[in-house]
Image (cartoon, rainbow, N blue to C red; front, side):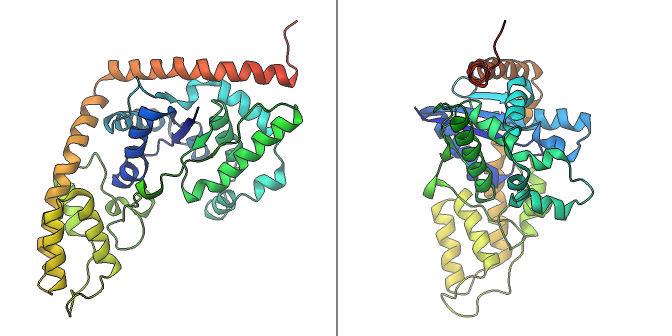
Length: 331
């Protein structure tokens, strides 16, 4: 049986890249696999969030997960901090993780360079907390991006080390779940890399964006001076716009502007206006559903409680066996 575990830090609104990059596939996976999706609020403590912001961000991400199609009746959707078992397993794994290997983790070294005044123990042991999140449910597969590959390798290392230490094939060594051609990379609006929050608010189309904001962002998207000969290769900026069109526009619309580009008669203003209107049509149902869910505290409370109960049942079973293996027994 394949068990999928994936988490999302509560750091703000979801954008188009989040949806096409993972969430759309998660909606499919919950129909086929045993899935655990959690909001990683423990992980966010490394940046010392304001308590009010932390709670609101958890609520925001939960509502947006649900609006994108995750179903609490098909998958286990929960808040990380509702599982005290995760913190306990995190502690056990830290006892068998070594300073040198943790200091060599690329993301830790990057954080030290970026924030030299906030090199806390949580940053150092981030891989062990991530490992606890994954193996607490005995996950077999984890959807990860390239920036998380090393953390997954650390998880495999910690699982293997535990198994060898206690002479039991207890924890599976999880592997990356590869979406392959189904994984879509959504470009940003600044003409450079992929869509993301770290590049600035205007680089991303958020699922909660109001129509006028969507239009303004797209109309400001970078272009070039236009093609000067037929069938000219597209610049990165223009290819990005066409990539976004292919996500939300009809095939006929994309073909129309491809023809206009190839015969040098394209008007980027017209192209961006069309993309903006089609983007508004695509985003609006998500936005309406997010606002509806976020205002329904009774429903959110029900979802969280349901997910907590299911996640605790799984985690408690794992930890009872872990404690037995380690040697913690009742008198």
